[in-house]
Image 1 (cartoon, rainbow, N blue to C red):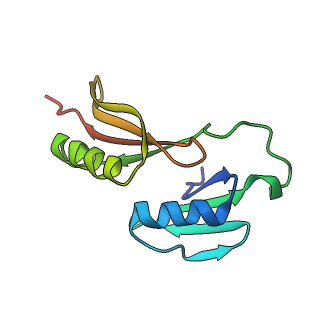
Image 2 (cartoon, helix red, strand yellow):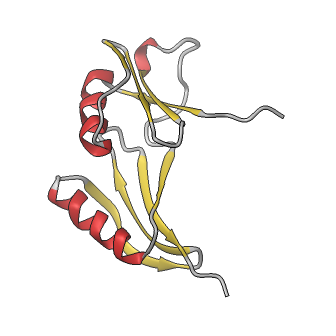
Length: 124
């Protein structure tokens, strides 16, 4: 089976979303046009932002139907990222919470896509 390394989010405005993700990720898009932008992460995964009205075939799902996960090394990093993102004005859908898989919180991008930050629970 082939591996995948490219996630595309359908957004209302690719330029506005590219500005949001450039600030969030701390790096500029590697490709940008009025209807599309792409970011390359240090792990090699690509994040595409495509203006939903220009996608073919037409998109039938509502915004916010996707979650991007950001792993952190420990609980303190989860809490620090939460504080940083709140300072930046990101809407938080779930405050830092301990769940069975670890400590997590969820913020939202401008289109309602979920941004989950988590530190896996220690195994043992």
